[in-house]
Image (tube, rainbow, N blue to C red):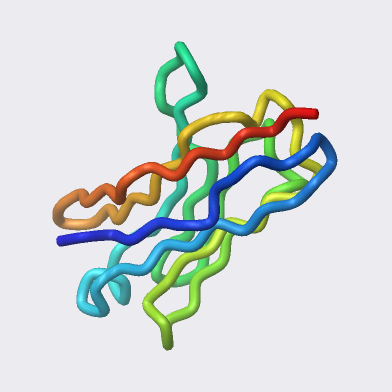
Length: 113
């Protein structure tokens, strides 16, 4: 199963980026979808998740700045990132979690002036 993540790039502090991740329909409609990130030299951490019933949960450091959403028609999950900080720099990964786990390839987000 392949998850296709995209949308990373270089942005200045205070800027915005939107990450996208597409999943197979049969996975997307029942699985919890999430975004994780791994900053340079650090461990991977959960950023935000959204369940098939649209429950959402965020790590404290991004609350009020990031928004996770899912589009069932496109079998896609998004992460809108606003007010980006230097410490948000990381490789961001999409994950589908249910009976099994599936990871997308990472997309690099660099926040720098």
